[in-house]
Length: 110
View 1 (tube, rainbow, N blue to C red):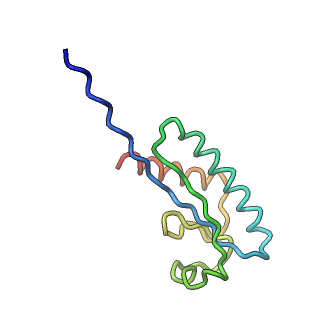
View 2: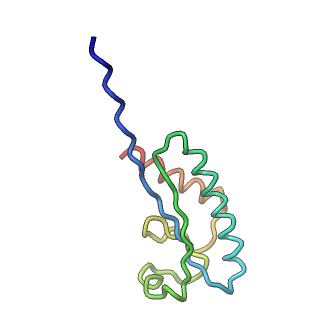
View 3: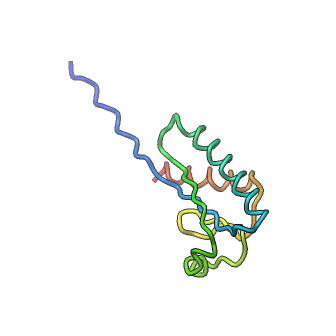
């Protein structure tokens, strides 16, 4: 009797969430804290599937002005997901969570 074929290994995909902010922006500080907490929660929820990892990166808009301009960022905080400007102002956490879940779903299907 032949041994069962091993299950194909699930490939991990990365989602990069970058928050373009300014050091003196109070809204940015609050937004970053909420986004970090949301990402931790989503990563924990998806840890059993072990297919998608959401990474957070804080980007100082002044230090990265050329990139910010190239992306079309005019206000802070702005949220870039996988090198695409998605939000030019702070969405609700429910809106951001829904967007990330949508991206996770698309990544898993591919």
